[in-house]
Image 1 (cartoon, rainbow, N blue to C red):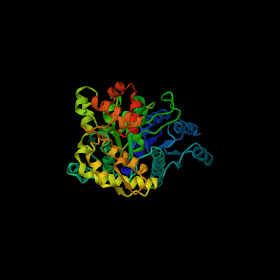
Image 2: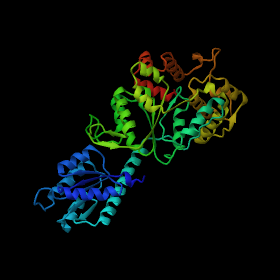
Image 3: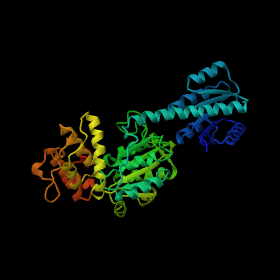
Length: 454
């Protein structure tokens, strides 16, 4: 199906025979058609759903030929949607009227009776121009999201990672929704990026959002966008992540922490590909593949009434578990070397390897923070090393007899990271419970988890 075949046209005229003639003509070309017989109906249609182009008459009242109704409608349409391409048509056209229509935002002018070939050509041109403008807006918003670096490599040679690689090979090229489970720091975001890069959507946006670190209002706004004035701090219109990711992939991390009210809206988007921004009743359509991740037991969350069962069914068309680093120790040397090369280049340090004792320390460490902790340990070692080889002391792993860290040997920041990790483990990775135990707000705990690679 071509992009034009999916385009939706709004045709507005007070004469039913004109509406039917245009509807039949453009429908034969594969367009979806909505019709309206008055300015009020046009505004209601545009506010109710997204259109690719509007073809509107300039006169609606009986025996009126001035075109003022249509010009006023043009102005009001521009206030509703600045990106909607509008083509005006009238049997009483003049040069002055056409110029005024263009000044008010019309993209082109059609004289009645029209030539079919010209009308279709103008429609096609305006649809493509409108879509290009909307793509440009999405790209601008996408570039402001600090996306993950494209083309990251999934390092995986151990037996524990083979099921993951099989899912990547079989499911990556599809549009199937994938639920990625596993402990924090195991590389769930990296797998999501790899799934996106393996699909036909690779050239389109990959947009990631951590739903767990946002309040209920912010999650709604981040995902679906908002109109100006939708809430106290909404001083300007904002595109949501679904709009930015249109045509590409949206990755929802920490999905278990999404509020129930937002879960209902997410389920609707997955089922219908439609949503509304906060503060708007206008329905918008998107084509997005959704990948999600969690470190929680979603089935247990469903049984506890905190997560919708029907949403879980939609998200886990395919479910894949990322194993913790302690289950894939065969990958540690390659992962450590990859991180070493990256950080040595970033900090312009002549470090090119590990002393054997340092590599042994890496292999023996329990890695409660998984790959993220390994990455941070290597980065610290690169910064602290003066020669070309990393020694065990530069890693600062501080193993003790029980495999855990010795608080007496740790810095204040390391102690804080240790306490945060222990609280999370003690409460089954439940962020709200861990935050209460530590005397922190949920957002404050998330900031520390991100800082410490947890």
